[in-house]
Length: 329
Image (cartoon, rainbow, N blue to C red; front, side, top):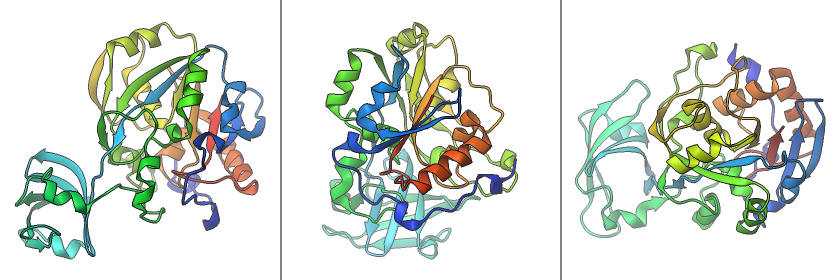
């Protein structure tokens, strides 16, 4: 398939800059694959549409403050190789040429010195630091890695976490889960089993597709964990609703029968994929030409995906990380 088949026009004003408060008051678009019907509602009414006794699967990964800012210079930490060596995206790139040492002023103490020791084909730098990456002197430079289409606002940091986030490790929030409140989850738990697993969101989720032939796109691996108790509950489930594309990718990567697993996945789901573990999906509205949109199209069909998104645009749903939700039945 062609990358251009996953493009659509979106008015800028529909890109949500802040979350809906309370969280569960975001809008909810419900799409039935059985009859193609679209229903407009609110997330607090989610249970009206869930299959009775479905098992909800949540990704409990917590977003790290992985963006470091030093005036006009930014370092987005992707991977810690050892306490003083990291892989990162940087800007401006000219400050981090191969073999070049940069000196960045800190609010406390002597400057941080950074040596660029490698640059890969995608521009990701391997950097050697004069301080350990977890040094307290870097804390005042750390920022929550809000997506580039949201203005950096550290006051939104706590709202860019799910209410059930626990293990640190993600570079972006598993955004479908941002809509849940603790009260709503408690109410849902009386009717549905709730399972938590972990996928640390990284480049595999949000790296752009650059090839017009999408089959040539290579997903980056992302680490995940499924516990023994989660696997047992899932094996007993008659119906599974994945909360977010990240949860879905773990389920499809592990496969049935589920088992306790710690690993990495680079699964790339596009139209034509046959789902073997997931019956329904809760997700947000995704960027044009993104791997996440391709996953949605794999579940709904390409034409139906465009129909859903045009309905959402016409009805002024809010898009992307802090935007509204979709339930695909």
